[in-house]
Image (tube, rainbow, N blue to C red; front, side):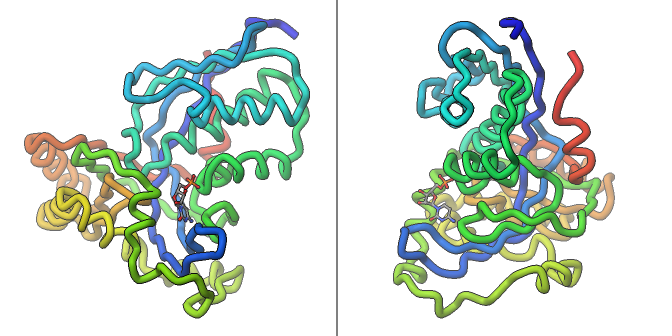
Length: 298
Ligand code: C5P
């Protein structure tokens, strides 16, 4: 195996069109029903096979590059699962806001698994990859699939659904880093375990997905808005600037706005930038585009 084999991988961001928290489970996680969507913002990972240990570097100093880094953990788990004896260099060019509800760390982990399997030339079954991904984090399995997908369980059971297309989305982040665990811990109405409020949701419901209101509900918003009122302010601004919908993504702090005209979106973009927010226009990336573009040519 050539030691210098290298690959550039796109590590896409996601939003959640909806996120419903159904109940708190015995294992402490919350049972979810969410619709994931990949969007056209991505980190770049350069993955190189090496003779040394697993090494992660990142151009953003706020990202820890030690064994706690999800990409580092992904590489270690893949190495254990396949028994390869080589190492890897994983260089992350970070464009996705850190701890911003856009799945950046989870996406990096999934891209590392996909990229390393290719660079190391190891055979891993889809099931093994899914299991490793799920053990890394609730959102990681989604990033092996991309596009529009339904997430159930703690988010790790992923099922592709009808692909949603939207060209005029605006991601806005007020500059706070949110701890997912902290937001879930604040869900006071869901502190007792029990399946009472669990509504069966399966293929049947997925087929009727086009009737679901998109960008309509995120059950984590209230807890996040209480802790960080600046997130609620971003949502309010997006609506007042003409977004037809605005919703916090994941556990925040990024809020996405949906626009029906690109001129309105462009105006909102410059207004919000002038207010000092991180602002990024994006469009949806469906499953086909995701799979086709994940590996970049050198
Ligand atoms: O799975 P992940 O490591 O991304 O989750 C981070 C934290 O968010 C968990 O430790 C848990 O506190 C919370 N969480 C949850 N229910 C979920 C997903 C995450 O309570 N479905």
